[in-house]
Image (cartoon, rainbow, N blue to C red; front, side, top):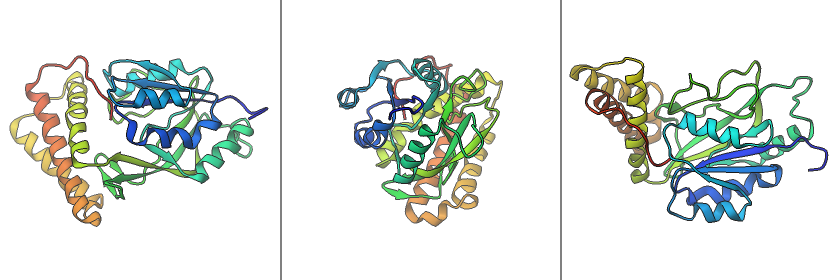
Amino acid sequence: MSGAEPLSWYVLTYNSERHLDAVLTSVRELVDDLVIVDSGSHDATRDIAARHGARFTVRQLDSFSTQRAFALDLCRHPWVLCLDSDELADAELVHGLERLKRNGFRLEQTRPDAFRVRRRWFFLNREVHAFYPIKSPDYPIRLLRKDRGGFGSGSRPVHESPKGFASVARMPGSIAHYSCDSVDDLYAKLDRYTALAARDLRARGVTAGWLEIYLRAVAAFVKWYVAKGGWRDGSLGWVLGRYAFDYTYRKYLKLRHDAPATVLRGQG
């Protein structure tokens, strides 16, 4: 795109072949630098990345925030797109990104440090209202100036978001987040995510007794199935409500009993 400001894009991957080709195809022509940070894939992820001309790096996963910080450091340009390997941009978002890039990432008379985008969550290929711990849709930062903010020491190790920006705006369009295509995928995430979350709680000095472990899990089910609207998703909402219970129960159980984790393989 002649005359436009250059744009990098990083993607975190782990056995991401299911959606990766479609995700990369949707935006690849708009980016000048594509970085893939993989945490040990054993499927076709590397081959797909190569077909799209990505710079491919393998790094063991210790936390999602440090993985993202590492990926940002590898990006060659100040402006960075952060769509994940299971986040598919719609046509309105692609056109909006093209306009922003052409205009030097200015929105009307302002030039924000970062941009949020509407994200819709899908489970078993159906859009849902709540997917612990996110209410759908949500509005994560997915385009940013890496010299204005990022994933510092205060970032959470899981369900992380970049911090430090003086001004943040909304982009047009949306992304569809195909987080899990099967119940097996859903529960495969559970061990990785709860280990990271328990380690974070331990580092912050949190403790939990047996009664608290159970009550927190029940409260998570009530919050995400009832209060956050999971019940509106029928049987899928019930599965995700139970997932909220299991996630919370296992997180606090690991906090109480497991030794601190060091390195985790895999990425969500």
